[in-house]
Image (cartoon, rainbow, N blue to C red; front, side, top):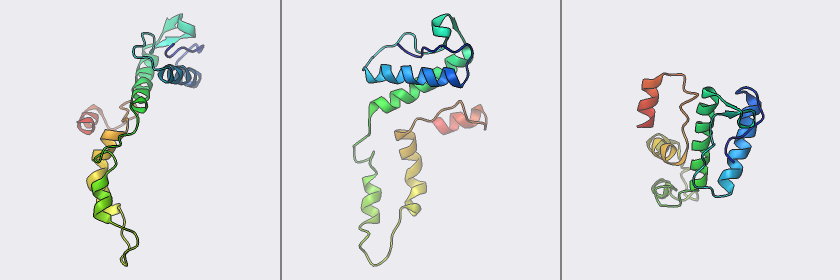
Length: 129
């Protein structure tokens, strides 16, 4: 099924319809999807711009299909143990730990798209490594 849509150009309609069909494909547990990206007008033509947008959406769907990491590292249990209970006399918070653990958790748990980065290709490479 993939990123099919009836739009004539890569616009909001194309993105909305493609996202819905890609989501249905992911929910059906498809392992290989040949016609995921770039198609317009129900498959009558393709667009390179739409191909990039659809490949990005397919990456997001892949991350969502992997599920939630329930490991000790994925749940940041070390940070929870370090902060301890909120019933202590001294209020504690995660803001001090945020800088240390946020990059590790963000890269592991989220999908970072490079389409919307306005800082340049070199910065995108540094963020993704």
